[in-house]
Image 1: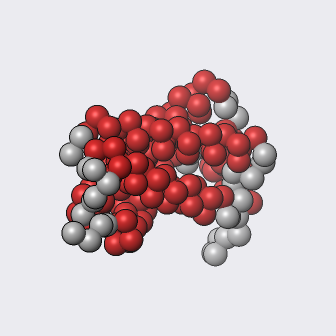
Image 2: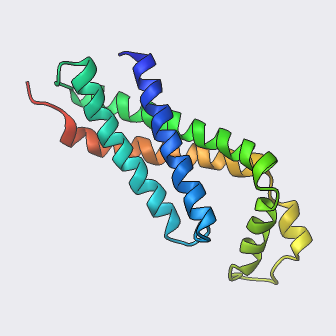
Length: 158
């Protein structure tokens, strides 16, 4: 495996995820329930395109299931890492009200039992790291699961 190439593909996929996140935030739909599906669809697209690119450029167009799986997982983890780094940087320097927005969003969610938290309580529960780490895990895990499936279709019979 050419890890440099895989990391490059993952960085490009991560940057695509950042662009999508910024666009959704600026459009005011970042907290919409369907926005996670946009992120997952983009991740799926990046895994498929990145795996095909890697197979063409580094494996003479032929890729096995396990090679495709490794490529997909590498893309997923790199994407999650880039997006988590973006979260930390953007929340700290570019979106100073983002954590307040998250707190307001959480306050607006229907409560199963009990009373909704106050703004101060909701705000105390969110942090940049508390946003970044779950995004890293989510993109890495969902991307790995997507890679299990896409590898079935991307492998070449030899």
